[in-house]
Amino acid sequence: MLNIKSVVFIFTLILLFISSCSTPNPSSPSTTEQVEAKTKTVKSVPPTLLPENNNWMSYLNASSDSLMHLYAEDAVKVLVDGTILSGRIAIKDYWHTAELQIKAMESDTVILAHPERGLFYELGAFTDANQQKYQHLIIWQMKGAARVSVFEFVAPQLEAVEDYEALDKRRALWMELCNRHEVQQLIDNLYEEETLYFNHRPLLKGRAALVKAYQYMKAENYQLSLLPSVVRQVSPDFIFEIGQCAGTYQGKYILIWQRNEQGQWNIFIDSNV
Image (tube, rainbow, N blue to C red; front, side):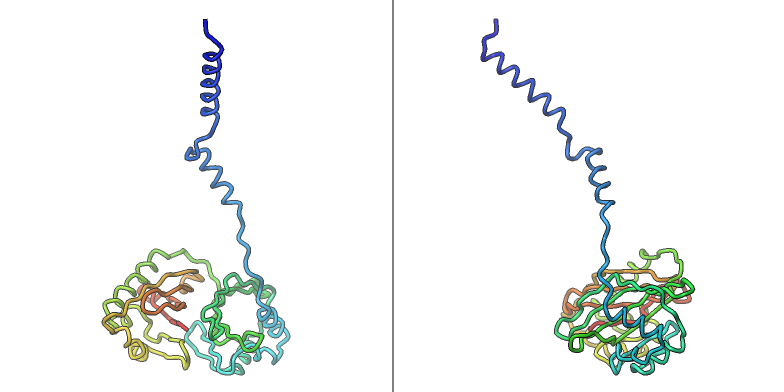
């Protein structure tokens, strides 16, 4: 006959067995699926629309000359065809001539690019009365308590097949040539012939000017990696990229890639501030 101690021991073993069978394995497919399901329900909240964006939309819709005060005196605006507008009056006149009525604006990415100079990178969009959507990339600079635009590029958002894999290969080639200090080959292979470089102003145009500006890459110990933070295909012909440099230079950068006639992605606009 079993004594009391034996009965208690056997009963304890039974309870432990039942408990182990009823406890789900954290690595089991059912648990993983539950975690993934919860993750998919999380919604990202975009940053609040910048006050300057609201003012821009109001001034533009009213054809107000106050629009120019949202731009620095030496602001630069680049059009998709490569036309360069210099100065806030020229930019204001361009927008008034465009005769757009903006129905909605959004700002989904605002990055502090240079704290000492008060520079911000912004990616956002606006939609006109005809339901055409445009993507914008703006460099803002603090002037007192407000921001003014120092650089602006806007492109119509058009349906496109995403081509990020091809872009990754082009970016990898950029880093390879840069880190081999082959400046001429870098510019010839990865930049548009009429490429634009926006740094501390004035704007540089053309491969020859950029080769001259990038001579510092020939230094023996110069090394650089491009770490993209946001990459957005805007249309079949344009991709916006904002990222972080690592290596000899550790600032942030902007690249606007353009598909050339051969179907390759080349750099149309390069900026690091």
